[in-house]
Image (cartoon, rainbow, N blue to C red; front, side):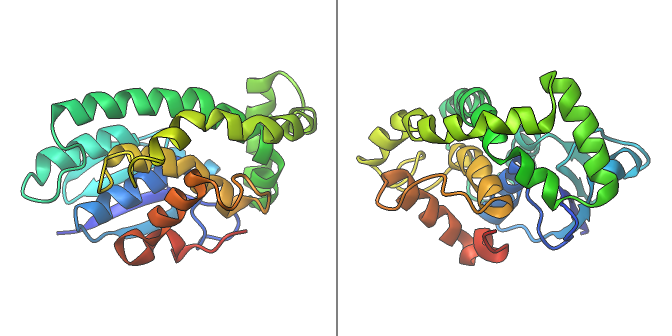
Length: 229
């Protein structure tokens, strides 16, 4: 069986950085499923798999094509029920939906301002042009103007993690004693920042930092297969 994961990367094709791709990388490792990674830049996405997607990650599992990290997790759960569960039951799926919404609305929106120029600077020139145009349209201002707000975001980012921090004082993972897909959802954006930016996002000694390090060590350290910026 051929299993291929299309993963977003910058100028260095060995450094996939998308937070959503990393959710899928850990999901595949959780299930014990080997895969080949095919790195793609922003401007390459529209042509992969005969224009099958506008976003990555995209997983080809033999003759199946599945996009969106959450949909991929659901697919893996259905297709490989004999492998370790990503959700631990229907309640875990519902919990993961909430965690996904919290992560997108709270973590991603803050981190993108903190690391925006780092992302831009990591891209190949053709992708830098696309990134600038698309993000300036999205934000309604220049990348530089958005990035100026990043310093204030970084100062307040730790407070956004308080619900997670409080929980992690009682258990090692969001999933409890062992990780679930909900852990990978939150790991993704912090891994995104780790790979593209040298900024310190979470301080040493923080329970969230300790949890993140545990996640990096999972599955023979697959999270460390790409070094920090």
